[in-house]
Image (cartoon, rainbow, N blue to C red; front, side, top):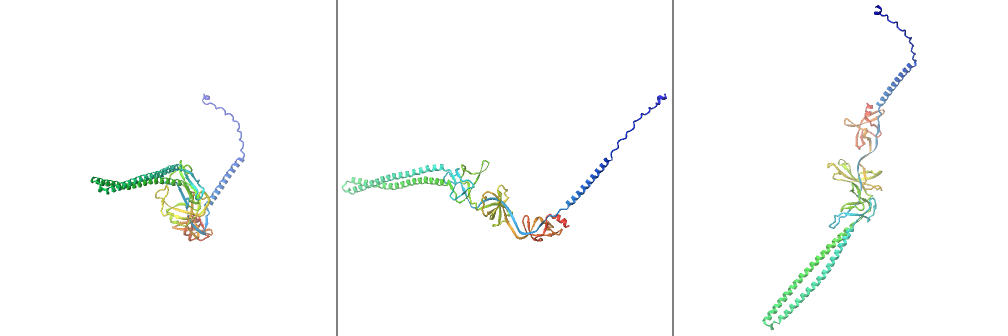
Amino acid sequence: MSAILNPIPPAPEAKPAAVPAPEKPQRTWLWAVLSLVIVGLAAAAWWSNSSATQEKASVVPVKTTQVTAGNLETVVRISGQTSSREYVNITVPRLNSPEGNRPMILQKLTPSGVMVKKGDILVQIDGQSMADHIDDVTSTVLQSEADIRKRKAEQEVEWENLLQSVRLAKAQLDKSRADAKAAEVRTGIDQELLKLQVEENEAAYNELQSELKLKQQSQASEMKILDYTRERHTRHRDRHKKDLERFTIRASMDGLAVVQTVWRGGEFQQIGDGDTVTPGQLIVKVVNPKSMQVEATINQAESGQFRLGQTANITLDAFPGLTLKGKVYSIGAIAVAGFRQTAFLRSIPVRVAIEGSDPRLIPDLSAGANVLVDQVDDATLVPLGALRTEDGKQVAYVKQGQEFVRREVKLASRNEITGAVASGLKSGDEVALNYEVAAVVTK
């Protein structure tokens, strides 16, 4: 029982002897330590460089410029397009005939950009239909003249017949009067008959005499009507002849032909041969290329700066390298509203005459003009970027040695980028541009 209740534990099995692990080489620990050292050194170097960089970045150099002596020019730029001061507009003629407003067809048109001489044909309008109509009216005039000659001959015959009747009536009256003188030898009845015959012949003669005057007036009126009819047809023909002459338009001056454009097919196109035009329509200009100008507009606020005779430098957008001289020769008196502008936006037209000429200078080129509106000679010039306003005064920071001294500056005049110094600076002074840094350095 005791053996069962308290079994004897078996003897533990013998464990094999533990094999000692191989020792790690000491170099692994060495490499780890070296890596940590290298990382620490790199971090320290980065931190040092970063601090140095920030320190350098915090030190911003002061940008300076020098006060100079020279002329202060105030320039206002205006833009517009070129045109000629001397030109002739060639328009479709307005005809004198009743059908003068009908469209016409261009038979020939001088190409744009061609130099023409006075008397050269610029425009030829198709006038064949009018020439045919003139022939018809001429035939009517000739027929009227023939009718006048015919009627005049007929009137001469009628007049001669009437005169013959008058002469016959006069003869009968004279005979009856002669018979009445011998009435003493006649009976009383015959005497009365002779008296009645004299009265009857006298009445017939007087009637023919009055008819003679009426016939003369009637024939004169009839000839007057025929003359008026012939004159009407003649004038009709002559009007068409003058209109036909106007279908050939010649140049009235030497110059450059500039053909106008029309809106056709959804775009602007130049007028050409075969196009239909209307009376009064402008089709071509003849301009003098030696008398060109720039047509521009200025704002009302700038109008007080402009004067006649002010010089300008003119540039063309199409030819960037070309610069021409010019002068303001016309300033509008009334402000006008521009195209597609609000009604209250008003501009004043200005014309700048271009001095000299250039083969590239033609009308309708976009151009700009830098107009010299003011100039101060022998002034002390300082850039406006070197000035600032402090306590309501303009000041500049002038370099003296390694420091910058604050000075109050008064300007006599200025433009957009430069000012003319009245006091506070002299030519040769070196002033700061980044005045915030200069103020820090000064403090």
